[in-house]
Image 1 (cartoon, helix red, strand yellow):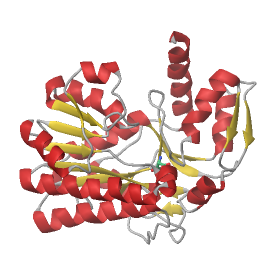
Image 2 (cartoon, helix red, strand yellow; image 1 turned 90 degrees about the vertical axis):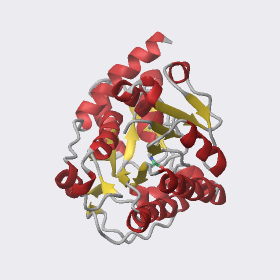
Image 3 (cartoon, protein in one colour; image 1 turned 90 degrees about the horizontal axis):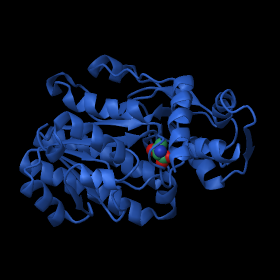
Image 4 (spheres, helix red, strand yellow; image 1 turned 120 degrees about the horizontal axis):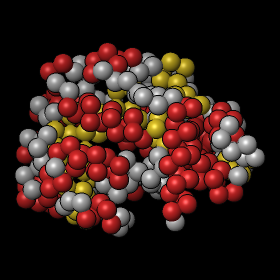
Length: 318
Ligand code: AKB
């Protein structure tokens, strides 16, 4: 990786991956691209930033060519709940955007990182210890675009030799950027509400257990996989990766250890509950551990401690 383009750089993963890659590869060698959302001042000031809609193949090609990009972290995507609300738009951004990225990667010999998701699984998937290779059959538009993405990345590698790689992320938890329109967003919102109001009304049932991961581990997974010797990768795309499996009730109990008067209530959103019920409860990520050394650093108590510490200092500084 010498010249890196990050699409969706202003989003939940991009806004944390960009600074880490800039430290590692040099500010000028990491081009952050975002659509509509204004970059925060740090992101725009610390290196090149461009406004880019991944559905615009010509604009994408111009950025890749002008900056001599050799690696693309393609993070631009609609999340599950918003994709269910606007399925045609989700297909356009998530699937057509990815095809544009893969095509330019084919032409310009770029490596591509594509984040799939637990959303690529569906109600027929074994929910406990979900194997790496298993029945998927997602029943949401988000899941359909993520599964198609895994397959397209595999196809471009086999057919055209494009160096595609990717993981299936669980719900991601971070203190610096709020997610937007996901089913696992509750796991971030709960911290903001706990620190500001000591109460949170959760849109998923108390016992809805899903895989989760603290953002530093998610960033580490992306970089570790992209820096790994490609010759030694067998699966390449759609690696199961997880760090913990917890429900809203588990998370609330852990938060209570830091904020004793914290309370949680439940106001179920049937759409997001339906999506969550179709996802695995806990993935088996042993293939990623074996093939490229994936190993998360943060379990539930360590993540909760980090979130409360960082978020409270941010809220106090405001
Ligand atoms: C979402 O909830 O849509 C995402 C995901 C699990 O892919 N966070």
